[in-house]
Length: 582
Image (cartoon, rainbow, N blue to C red; front, side, top):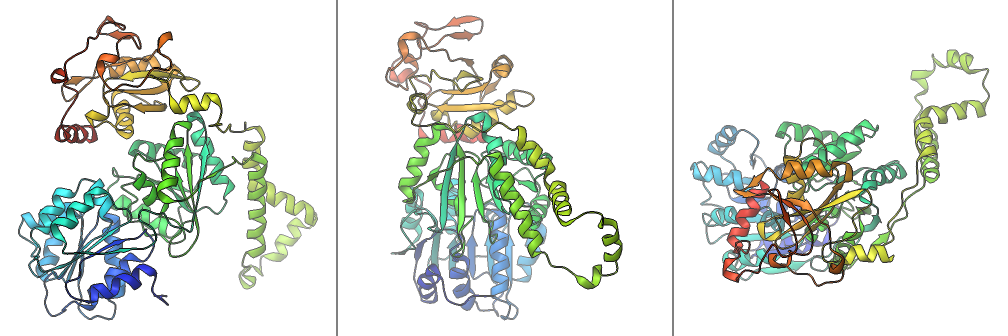
């Protein structure tokens, strides 16, 4: 399979898994050879004459489940009769049950489907000797904690357990304390550190220019082969559709696609029939694709750990890669935080000019012409006719015509295209946006700013707010900056859509609570005041309309802490978050 020497994570982990009673926590980035690190020693210890699951591997997504199963089948090519079964949602549970009844040795599963099989009493875990949690941090982020606890409770206490994770969030400590026995911690690199082979670049642009910036970046790298990460399924599909319409070799991958559609898209991407894959974080988990040149963040994720996973899709197995973030000035703080955690400095990118892009594309074409393989025998009989057809043209004319035929569209596009203005985050305007006055006086040019009566305490995050607008307002709405507070939020939409957004959203409810969307117009005396999370402070800070009545200074009175329904317990906030997710 091309292995010559073990990678660091393999060198550290394999000896422990070959031993007895060794629990291991391994912190390593994606693309460092983790599957072989646990797969090879587990296969070595399987008793092929006992047709019951002896090893259990849990992972967060269907794609990763299938990838691990494929790798294990490759590793066990010369182990006769060894059976590996991938168990995941989106495929026939009846066929999985039939295979289990015939007997398998290794089960690779997503938690939800495995729990379903356990509840049906169709899978027996009593002989499991090794349990692997791969991408444990992502499983916790996706809300699989209860499922994992229920599964581990049915596995023999004498089993060995290996927990793989790219980052080390607090939730993992609970699993290790409850289910692991004095685990050996193996850290490849620094904790939570990103891959050293990845170059990190960010472009700070206005919200209205994000898609144009994406196109320029894609054009500037003619041989780009990468993943574009978006925050929501809707945004993912919209960006993919735009790229396809503009002539790019792209497609989308998100949770609303059927399993057959996802498999089809992934197969096309793996064989490089697709150059750009536009995906959500969850859909792209476990994509083991070689030679990705770029990862592009179409906006930074809410969780910094997600950035680590995103960027880890490139620069795998010792190769180099580029991680690009297209962001706006409000995300400057996130960039600094990611730099601190990854111990990596981001490079501020210069937006390539139209001239530079055309030049790079033309030289790429010349390289392809130089390196093209000529099949002399196949074209020999056709060449005399072609020579006669083109004999009136000299060499320079032919070269000009080939270049023009290939690049007239791109040259025409960039000839009249305006240069994209990068936001100067050091300017006083940029700093004011970054700090924000109490209610963010400066909206993005061409956008209107609104107040929304839901905030972080209600489980509302940026992606849920975008989905909320999309569900309430028919048609396309371009959303600008989002500012989430504890008990309320602010968001911006294009000025021409402002009235339609406000009128549409104010008729809806979330969990029996009415949505209130009002213009966020700061009063003159408000600039520079301290930030506060209590609702009693909102009166006097902006004015609007609610149920036909004026809403503004003095309308709201301070309430006692016992009379504040928006202050919920953590369980209630979790419930709110689930409702928004639905």
